[in-house]
Length: 410
Image (tube, rainbow, N blue to C red):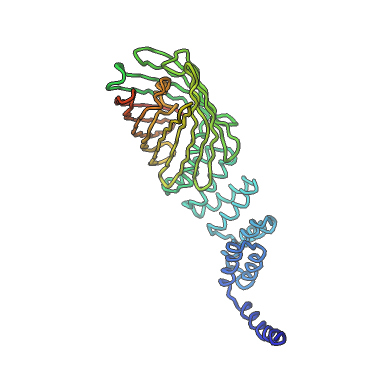
């Protein structure tokens, strides 16, 4: 039986070798891709790609794939040799520029990556992949102005590019060193209070090497009384993925504002255009109210979806607040329509002074919309919100808000 098996192998082996040797370049390319993507066997894939190139030396797609394989296999010298040889041949394929620039970007050779991308864009000025990588490279270099130009051009070509939309919002927060803003909020109650509320906030935002810092002063007229509050917020960056929110505020006019407030959150920019946040908010009136928050967001084409919850524990039960937000971006990162619906009171709302009387334990429903638009370095916003709140057990009232805002970046 053993002799028979040996004889059969000897008979079939030449046929197998002959079949392997007569595979076309396309067939070898397919096998190389299978070895790389299905088996994660880069050395085998490299051997197959090189064999395919022996049969078709000018097959650009295989050469580009070989360069990618060397990159993934951490053989940067061989990868660069492949791409440089293609450059000498004046190859103009979009994928060649993307693969070569990606190699340099992943290895912190950002200036070289931009040089390659600019050459590629001279042949393919509307390439979304090249423009997106260019925006990422400049963003990694902290050159937010050039990153903004690249991503804005991309979104003008395809406003539904999800990854570009998410990146544009991140860039927008950093591409101007300074911003001053003013916000006015008007609130009308049909039952709960006799007097309307008026709140004005003036802010100054400064971009620093570690993140943005915002100083804000608020004036409120509530219950026919006036009061002020000062707030300071910062968004220090920890890495390309993580950043913090750290905030605090103080007021002598307790009842119109909390005496002081604090808050900290850890935020993450996750793969596939997801975002996440977890943290706490604390308000102190005559005693402290602690609220724990978590949120998840997702960009999809022109849309941004976000769901946030606040959980407020006490000795008897745990109160929950939920808010869902949807934005539809019309142009860049600052132009959008927003829709919001939820339950409960947020500590970030202008009505957070109502939390002093533990109204967060009562039922509240809210729904509203907002429109933001920009003109050069000027940002405008208008919003409205409707609340139906149980302000005493079994008694409900309505509240109508209008908010106007203006920001100037420079």
